Image 1: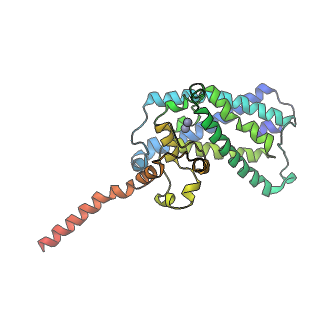
Image 2 (image 1 turned 180 degrees about the horizontal axis):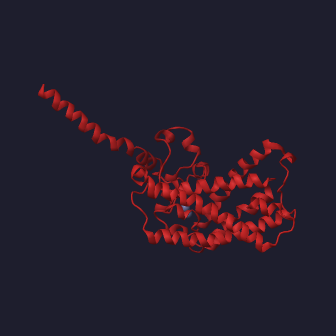
Length: 283
Ligand SMILES: [Zn+2]
Ligand SMILES: [Zn+2]
């Protein structure tokens, strides 16, 4: 519905607010809801060996996450509507004709948004861990020590304002088409929900390749919730590596979680081997 806001010449701010809030809410409900159905209902048994923390969050914890997320949706709606309002008045770098900058820029602008958001998230996140700020900004998010997909937007309102800060930042700094902004929003919610769902879906050899040093994993963020310290990054693991803030046991934990499939097979293999040996002894 962002495009409706962008397309209207002089929108009533309340209508804009309602539209943007609804858009953000639907996106959150669809992505977090789908992740919940996949990981906590349909494939819970089959995927369990990849559950980073091997227990389910209680329903009280999940409802708390949903309540905080509902507050966040209001904040995101407000900041989002103000951002669209500003762009409609020509106060931002939003452009409406793709031909103005061409398709290469269209895709490059999405990449820039991702890099900018990753950097913004890392540094604001570390700042919110400062002992003077933590309680007011970030404590609510850390009430989830074993998060579910619904923790993706579980922020206290002051933190929600900080998180929403990426909307105005992007449109002030990067010439961006509304559609590119929507793609960026889909990217952010996908990563955010995947990071909070609690299952490690990457291949075991990821950590042995250069890619494992660059991209972030659900194990990284789940450990952040569990341990409270270390692993502050979002999409990439680059800032954590540069600043030496990865948790000391991060790679070890990733390997432990992703090798469980193998270990689960070992008793079966051992049983098959002993069965064969018994059969051979009988011959
Ligand atoms: Zn944190
Ligand atoms: Zn989190």
